Amino acid sequence: MMTPFGMNFWAGIEAQQYPQIMTPAQAAEFLGVSDYYLFDLRKRKSGPAYSQPASKIVRYMRDDLIAWMNEHRVIAG
Image (cartoon, rainbow, N blue to C red; front, side):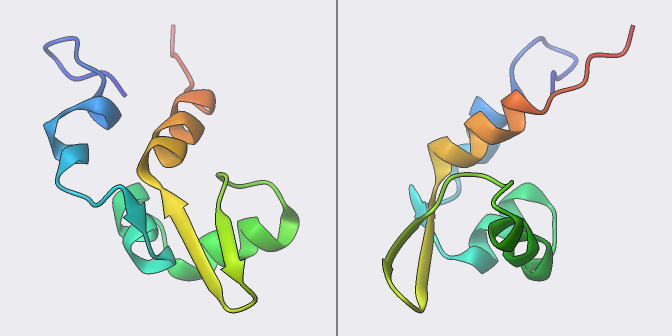
């Protein structure tokens, strides 16, 4: 999303306030969606990339979330 000043929101200062590696709850907050929505995306294999170092541990990389948002941008025009 572009700000009025032409900066990419997801790469801006706001994004830097979140850790580089996030839990699903942190990632959901970062994206502005629910935890369940991210779970559903994982189940459908259609959401942002994630790591699963153990069967019950899921982590998201901030850069992957930003990349996923940029891939799904819609430019009105």
